[in-house]
Image (tube, rainbow, N blue to C red):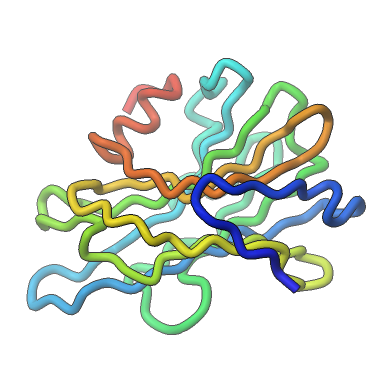
Length: 191
């Protein structure tokens, strides 16, 4: 049975399942009905070192760059509408392939062309992140976001990180001022 998390909560993935190697990071959301532009939300992972910086732009995995150079992260593709139940987008993480110098995988979701379309996370609801053991298909943990980020166009949903040789997951649910461009800039990548 999956362990539900609240904002700021964390779970030790290594202790939950000592044999865990392959994770599906499932992300989902619904958007307010609008007569304007269709919402296009995009999931991504940013791989960072202990100093919080990415080694290069190859450590940013998203719909245009679906695979990390090391083979540890694979984005399954862009869902342009978010229609339907379940995961709207998913990213596969192979923990045993994550290079030793990578300490954290930041999982975020951003709204494509949010400023142009006057869209923000205040118009998004039922957002969640869940981790699934790819081999057993068992859900490990889930975090249902409840924040009202009415002015934000990008949000960090959670992070998978190393701590004393073990893998953990923390539920974040934090909006980023300046959107995805600012998020990747903060972590050492020129937008």
